Length: 204
Image (cartoon, rainbow, N blue to C red; front, side, top):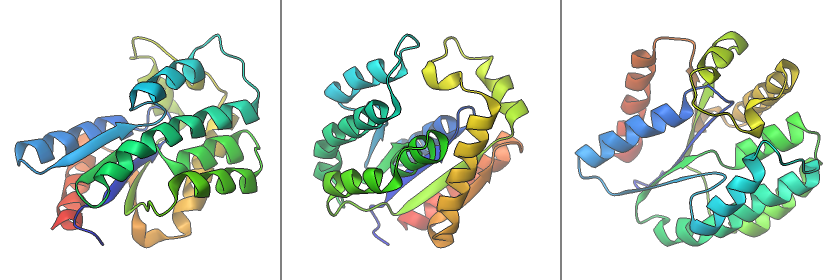
């Protein structure tokens, strides 16, 4: 594995992925280790414009339009991602697995369509490792209630989130060596230590 890996943080709403990417960012910054961080949807200037469209609670796109907007956001981000690929550690808050878990397993979009467009957008860009954060429905709802505002993807029903999370799990089982499952129902400090210890191994 490259010492400048591409590390992705995945999981449904309230699973703690954004918290943990913040912890890792602070860890790397404190040690003056060069890294680049980005989120999906969003990240670059144009992608942030697309993010506002996707997540707006008043938006009502059909599932294929939703998919294409997410992939348009990714396409815009690839300019930055390719710029730093193999030059800096790259941290990504949601990426390919989220597209498949939400759009295919959650909403039923054809998997072949997702893979075809992704392949064209990503070219030779490869993910090195993924932290998959899992959370039960009770804790997910509890955490969402603490947020100042909710977006369109915070308001699906329990069955949808179950399908999405199970989709993530199926994806992780296809290559377990490149995934770390994080049980976000456990004490947050336990998971912080787990992730930082794994990060140290990935970059040394």
